[in-house]
Amino acid sequence: MADHTVDWHVRIVDEVGEWESLQPDWDRLAGSRVFCRFDWMRGWWRSYGFDRGRPFIVVVTDENGVVRGLAPWWRQVSVTSGRLLQFLGSGDVCSDYLSLLSLPEDEEAVARAVADWLCRGQGWDALELDGVLQEDAAISVLLSACRDGGCSLAQRPAMSCWNLDLPSSWEEYVGRLSKSHRKQVRRVERRLLQTGRFQLRRARTEQERDRVFAELVRLHQLRWESVGEPGVFASQRFTVFLRKMIETWFASGHVHLYELVENDRTLAAEIHFVQDGISYAYQAGVDPAERARDVGHAMNVAVIRYLIEEGMRGLDFLRGDEPYKAHFRAVPRPAAWYRLGAPRIRGKVRHQAWVTQRALRCWVKAACGMAGREQG
Figure 1: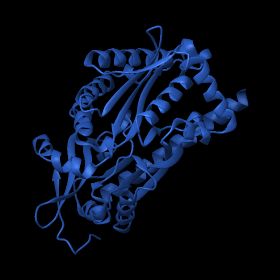
Figure 2: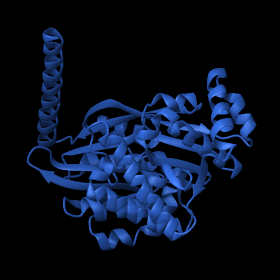
Figure 3: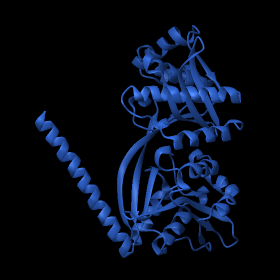
Figure 4: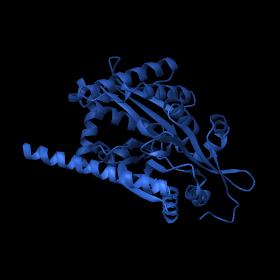
């Protein structure tokens, strides 16, 4: 399956020390994929993976020992799933655009080399791929080659990621909006932003950074607790992970923290990760008491206008199919979740058991829903 014009070699890195030695090659191959970069995945491991499994990084090198590709995975073992491989950065952190890492010219060959190893390897029973675009060519080659090699495959659609290309001027952007949304934006500008009643501020110092982050956590939790949900910052692991990532990337400009203020009171706050002219809107918090004044909408308008004025090329709203993203003219990129079962008896049996269990859960949910409607 692999490109035999190159003598490909595949090895597994499962020790943290050797993993850290890969950092230069890792970031070279990750390129602009911010959630695939070494700092992000290594930081995730320190908060989420270290006490649950081991790194399981598939490294593809050429005949000269040059690293040409990486599969950034980790492995955990359980009675139900057996030896399960997943992306580093998966789960609660919601890392988007996860994929195999390689230069574009090596994409297909690396994917086939990894698939060859999976079809022959003995160190896994199942592989779950989350945060993956349906259009991802490397993942498509990997899945196709694994199926040809005898692996079982299950899949389901996931929430889309939403991309907004930014023009060179604010007026050009506003002109792209629908007539009704254009009126809403102009109203926000006149009543709240141009009068100075609301101001958008970006944290510039470490002291401001820490204060805005604390405000974001507070507002996010207020919002979700007001509807009876815990909010992501109820997780200590997540809070520690995100705080450390902000501290790691703040000085280099790879993270921006914004707040919308009125009379020095923070009404909304956002965290964006920035890479190669794209701003990734990762997390936000809005005061639920200010819903009547449409503070969330005002925050979006202010941030988009700021990004255009700063010369940014795009705003990525990341995963989630909330209607407001389409209103701002963002375009969806469909994503999917995949599960591969190893092509050996052990893997096939576990995969079939998983499929059966999932079908049963879906049937129970449907039955309960029907019962609820009959009782209502």
